[in-house]
Length: 109
Image (cartoon, rainbow, N blue to C red; front, side):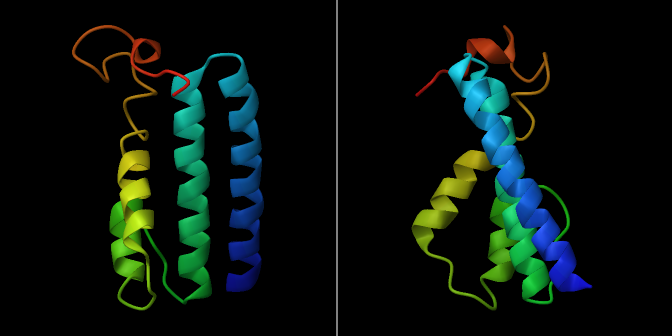
């Protein structure tokens, strides 16, 4: 059932958001950023399910563009997810940047 699946995604999104707090607190900023991207992805996919749309992939921007056909999405939200989209791959991989490790590129700010 779509409602059950969308609620489960929201529960998992909340859990991911909660996991980001100690990651940030202990200075694992790259992992906090990735975790928040994942939380947002789950929320957006849950919204899609509620609207009768199954969203695939990991680009928050593309998923919201698809939802924008049926739902008003403020431009500020799109700007925010464009930033979050950059946190999907680089924080997780040692070769996500030309030099250094992901922790060298992510700060509390």
